[in-house]
Length: 450
Ligand code: HEM
Image (cartoon, rainbow, N blue to C red; front, top):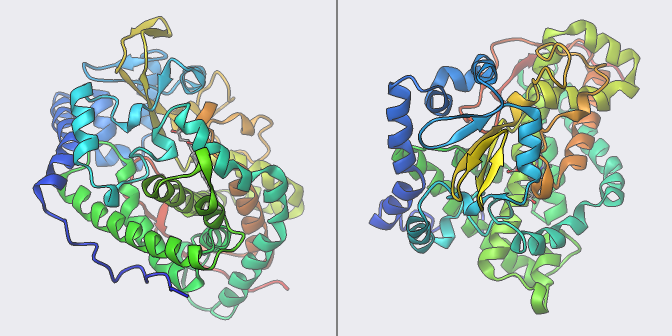
């Protein structure tokens, strides 16, 4: 049997610093980067929201500034919205699409970008990633993957998620006197273990995959500098190299995991090598790069609201709603983007094909037209689940029920075992703009309850 190549030792660095990488960066990010920085220097709010580090850490005042200007605002390059109705409308509209993730580029430059980008360095928002293609291609990929995430299949994972949580909490209980990093020791481990099971990933590879996923996550952000792009590209190449080894191993010794199923497809459904990589790596990365933030964000919010934590300990049936309230209040995915595919109109504003709109999901989830007193965190909020934290329309998150299940099980198990768990230092936020969460959460867990 061939073994999967250990992530980390690879030929990954071979094509770095080549002119091809530089051109790919220039087209995907460099032009954007220059325009956005110019806009930000002139004080343009939409540009500042993309590059200002202060607005990365606390984007909420900027969301309110944007909201005060109306349902949609625009600068000379792009428009943006924090309006719940507009976000929903655009995400569900077939007049808008992802346009290959490069919609703001003129068509000839999009074509050039597709030509120069190396298939072994494609990121989660590069086609043919499911996130970056429109129907009918999107429908074809989604149909294959959706089979693994039906409500029935996810429901059956409940026991496995609870077992993983128990194993991790047992290990934490052995170190209860130490200061722990809740992200590293729990919030990241639980989702990566579950998704690794679903995709047939060997346990030994999980740690390195987490690290590579973290390094590559920045590629979701717009307007990366060449340095950021290069570092992320290195991680992406290693991920692709690892994935190729994983597919080889699985093809020689197939199981009933999702990658084995995708690799087995035949006839018109068959995925070519690049498609298989993009679909598989997206599910893998989406499976652990987001839920970790949901769990971490919940821990910080509950630390700040101990009365609500006490209420949940007395009313454990409230955990699923509490998870939705965390998704609403501190959305792990703050932002997505769509591009007009034909002439259309949103909130009275005309759109020409190719015109992009930034949809701030994290801002829509604070829309006072939908949520009373939206800045307040309230685990009993009646309509918490009306958030758009999982997007809407054809790209609605495929892992939404799994993420909800993982977070509710993980949080309940954590606090029932360690009801006195408290932050013991300053949480360190992630340095990404699209993904919102914490890189490190120092905690003391206190005495365990059996
Ligand atoms: C808190 C956890 C999660 C959040 C907040 C989240 C959020 C999102 C969002 C906002 C999108 C759509 C982006 C867009 O419309 O442009 C998305 C798509 C997706 N998510 Fe999630 N996600 C989470 C967990 C997961 C998990 C656990 C998995 C897999 C096991 C997953 C798999 C996917 C996939 C495959 C897509 C692409 C769907 C498509 O394009 O049709 N997600 N997610």
